[in-house]
Image (cartoon, rainbow, N blue to C red; front, side):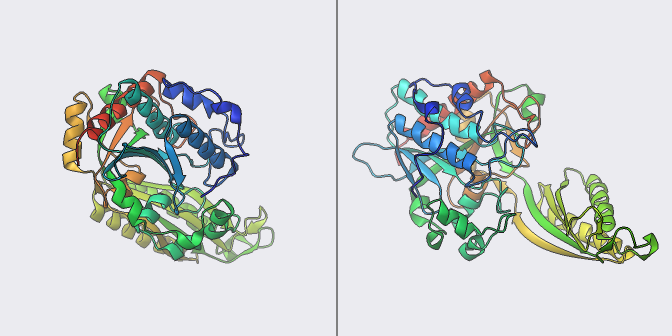
Length: 424
């Protein structure tokens, strides 16, 4: 992939120290993708803001002497090669640069900035890797544009059908194929990348914690143990569209009323199941006029639980209740599964190594999905989490203290350095 190097703010990367800090790097991109309406940041994949961030990363990597290229799935790779050795059994780290609508500044970019600083630290320490090191930046991790989270890693691992991806549409009706082609990714060649997978010996992703585990434990960094089962479903509630002013209340088959009742019931159903999380974060009436009774209401359900069977049972219960509510309102409901990821346990031998190298770091699971979770089925993976003192994520209130950010990068450098001197 070739990105137009004429875009972006070149002054952001005019001067780069070999001893950069995560705080300084995050400050360089703080103005990119700010959302004046929602607050926070909106950086959907292949948007101007996300492309600007990709250019920023490429420039930063090149200034560190890393060899940069973008693969056929739009993943950016920055390589620290071992002289005379092939790119085999590499130690890879990285994250993503896209965001949810109105998201916080650290979700994704913290892992990318920390990876760059980890390279700086290893070079400053005089580490001579015996295994190649690489940073990978994955596209569309959040799924905020095309509706499928972790799209780059799903494509790389062959976990999603390329034809399905090519035909995904954003809210403006643009297909993934058309948008990708416009930004240098040939949609004909997206899909499982055996070559890329064969190069990864170990993948370690650093991410801001999306919860309160580290707050409650009073620790700056944790080791990830697993990602709990989660999925996304689209409900379509069909009713009778009509005029808001001429249709008596008794004559209505209003899908908005049915949808509202279902959303409340989802909350109550999830509360009865320990450790369950169920969220409706998006609701879309059709046609959407203020003086129109909707003919259809679509809403998206996110359900998560550590046990896969409980997740499936919870969705089944929610659907049964939704059908009852819809019938009472003279409507009908349809359910479409959009994504489903079973519980992922990270590589245990690798986790034990991280626990030895970072003895004060607790081990936590997470309810948030990550590219590391997708890659776990194909290569040994691990995660590091950095404390978020607000305990809030996917929101402008997401935060990381400067000191914790630097501790996280040092922990990542420690892990990468130890792994890099292990011979294949």
